[in-house]
Each structure stands twice: as C-alpha cells, then as structure tokens.
Image (tube, rainbow, N blue to C red; front, side, top):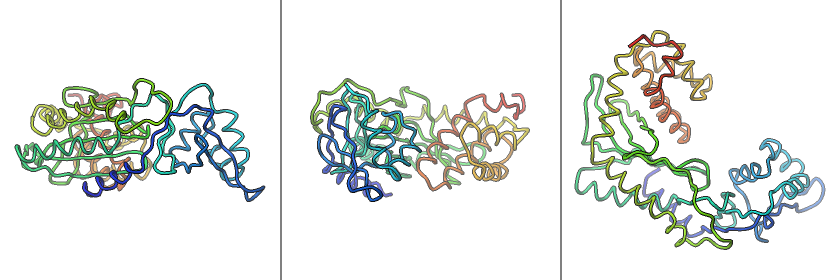
Amino acid sequence: MELTQMAKQLEEITLLRKDLIVPDSQIVAGTQGFLNHATPILSIDGMPVQATSWAHSQIAAKTVIPIKYYDRMRTEAPALWAQSINRWMPQGKNRLARMIGDQLTAFMSDRYLVLDNHDVLFAVLGVFRDVAQTVGPITVQSADLSETKMYIRAIMPDRTYRLKDSEYTFGISIQNSDVGASSYRVNPYLWRVVCSNGMIGRAGSTDYSIERRHTGARVPEGVLSPETRQARAKAILGETQDITRACLTTDEPFRAMLGAAEEAMERQVIDMTGAVSAVGSVLNMSEDEKNSLLNLFSQEGPTIWGLTNGITALARDTGDADRATELEEGAWTVLTSDMLAKARVVADP
C-alpha cells in the first residue's frame, strides 16, 4: 500500500469513527427471525451494530467463551449465542466500544489508551518531511493496514554501511493497533540492500525505541471525543516523533545492530536442521515455513547470520504483513539471544 493511500483510508475512517464508553449492561445480544432462519444481532446502547471478527473475539474473551464455540453458536445456534453473552457478560464495569459507522471494531476496557492509527501516521509524516529536507531522502519501504494493525517501515537509502557480505541501510519500524491487538512499538530497522530483507531491532523502551501497552486512566461514561483522545495520546505521539527523528538521523542504534551482525557472521552453525527446528519452535513456524527456511538458510551459509538472513528472507516472501513483522522481530531475537547455544547447534565462540 502506498503511504498516500493509507493516509486517505485513515482520513475516511476518522470521519466515521465514534468511541463510546458504555456500561456492560448496554451490550445486548439477540436474534432476528425464527428457528432455523434466525440471525444473531448485537446492540450497544440500544443501537444495532455489525461486529468485526476481531471485536467478536474480544466479546468472547470478556465472556470467557472459547472462540471456536462462540463462532459455532453464532452461526449454528444464534439463540444460544445471545443467551450465553447476556448471561456471562461481566457486569458493573464500563467498556470502550470503538465504532466505524455502525460497525463495532473493538470492545475493550475503559482504561484502554487509544493511539489512533491516523494520529500516529500523521505524527511521523511530519518528521519524515523534516528529515527529508535536512538530512536526505526517505524511502517508505512498506505501509500495511489490516483489520487490527498498522505497519510502517521507512529507510534512509543514501546512508549505507558495508559489512563483509553486503551493504546495509537503516530506518525505522512503527507498529500500532488501535483496537487492542498489540502493544505500540517504534524500533530501529536494519535493511539489507542486496536482497531487500529487513530486521526489526526490538529492544523494549530505550532512547531509540518505544514499547508501550495501551493502558491509561479510566474515562467517564459517554462519547470519547477526538479532542480528548488526542490529548490523552499527546505525550506518546511527541515521544514517537523524537525517536523517529533520532533513528533517522543518528548512527548509534544501527552500529549496535551491525556489531551484533558481525559477531553472528563468525558463529558457525554445526547442525543446520537442528537450528531450523529450534527457531521454528520459538517462532511458531509451520512445516512449510521450516522447509522454506532451511532452503534459504542453505543458500546463505552455515552461520548465525546466515540463519538470521534466512528468517528475514522468509518474512520478505510471506505476503502477510502480520507474519512478516513477527519474523522480522524474531530474526533479532535469534541474533541476540542464546537459544541456539542452548539447543547445542552452534560451535563455541
């Protein structure tokens, strides 16, 4: 997706967005029609809504109904589904219901701190423009928007470093979910030019990264206005701009990443199949992914860095933004942890 297309889509969503803080008692399930022709309906504060699959999964979690059973009831026994929700929905608390028009996109705690994708995007766009004018060109490597998450990766193509195997450039990775599907993450991003592989230097909250759960103070019952939402997020968005600027204009976080890469180039993997098996378990890989990784790893060479590049190549080829991000973060975990040593698949340093 082009960044301009993402911006336009988020602008359109913002025009339709409505956030409600409502009591549990205002979440009511029911049916429409009779017997085999009944269809499930859900209403919030007396307003019928259509829920996304993600919002349904959150309702299932709140009512402690296993999602497979929840989905089966909803499709095969709507009356039982409605009865179960109305019986098991916790009472006495307020919830944040995020709406786009009449569609329920999220159902969360009233303590959820909303960092809206629209606000995050436009906060970093300003930094991108400033850095492009004062430091050098920026290339948005990818921009993806799914039902639950937003991903942006940008690099500085004119600022390159060479290690023994190829050239690298650096940039930033931004990940957000404004519906409760993940924490908020801003991290350094290392890009291998020759094969277009990227790795996310996930390192918690530091001077060059943010990892934050969407937790804040409770909000009073009623409509959560865009102004209130933005005021609550202001400090985090300001920190995001500072870290984005730092990652695009300073070398320090990337020298650390390149230093880890140089060490990994010297660590020999003595059991390639065992290494892939160990990584596959940690990164929840399917058999197809493990077979592909073994092939890519074989092409790179039997070192930890070769294995890491195999993982990032797998991420590049996956075609799914969620999975690609998991693998790009996982590559950094493999590079910086002792999982391979514990699996006894690498030579002693």
